[in-house]
Image (cartoon, rainbow, N blue to C red; front, side):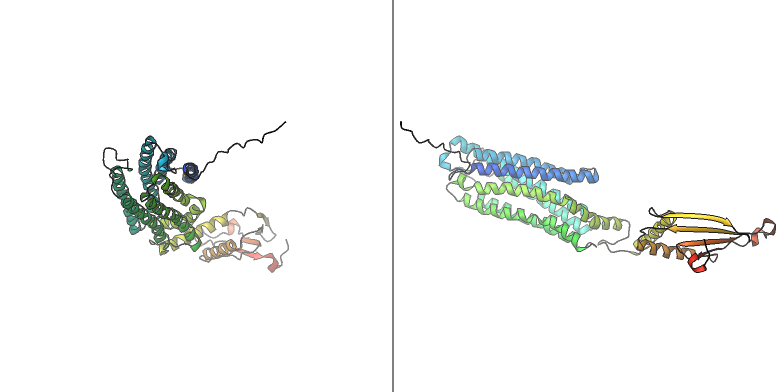
Length: 416
């Protein structure tokens, strides 16, 4: 009885030598998933801290929605031929691929516009300096004009009525246009990196928070690197006889550029940035509006006097309230000679050295203004007040003010 060898079942391959469309689809959906998570984290952080959704948040939400639309269009491109050889595609697939590419290009531009302006709006809220605000507004206006003109150019890139058909149609130099577009894209990204540097570098703050804040904005360098790669691959594809196969790396770079443009716009809203911002820029801006600092956070006399007043008030409040870790016992007795003896014993546990010094200093200054009281602060004190009989009291105008003397028992030798 003869047995035949089992036949091997061919395993499906996600990637073959002539088909990279699945790579485009998988990476595209991975990037958009990461993008959505970053936006959710940003909005959640903003809501927890301020209970508000502001204008820059609406821009990032819009950028995310257009990014999802861009990924859907890229997936349609991949399903209809991107990453495959052009000779293996039907006429319908080529037409659908070009329509999807046309829609993806417009969604790509709008996504970048919304993500960049979200950062611009954030920059205008970080600085009180007029020149910084003016530069931020100018950057936003430039990005807006650049986006509108670019969308108009893409909408009429080829001969009508089918302006989306760029294979076998008469079109302008698409390689030159996309090179121009991405060069401006890189320049605007550099603006969004350097503008924060100019804003935060003159602020009165420690270097560590400054580096944290700037590092959050400097992550856009990732977007710049992906943009440069996209330009290189697109130029190769535009000059290739097999566009659909040569263009898949450029399409994938488009996904990475728009995705990381949104993600890097969300990074400044993470907790370390917000903590550094609160301790640096926002606090300096609040003091400046109150007239206590100049435009770069340098202190003024008003700030110093205000801080001194608040410090004295704080110390007075501390002196009026018992320490939360301490205890105090007060006894009052009358001795045979008609003296009222007030014995106060105070026990303080774990009192900060700095608070004790400041409280002692301000208490001594306040009490030294009057000649009727001399206080020596000790842990255990005795207060002696001289009482006079009602019949022996002089008229109110000449009645002397009772004097209080505090002595340390350890120095006077008086037994408890």
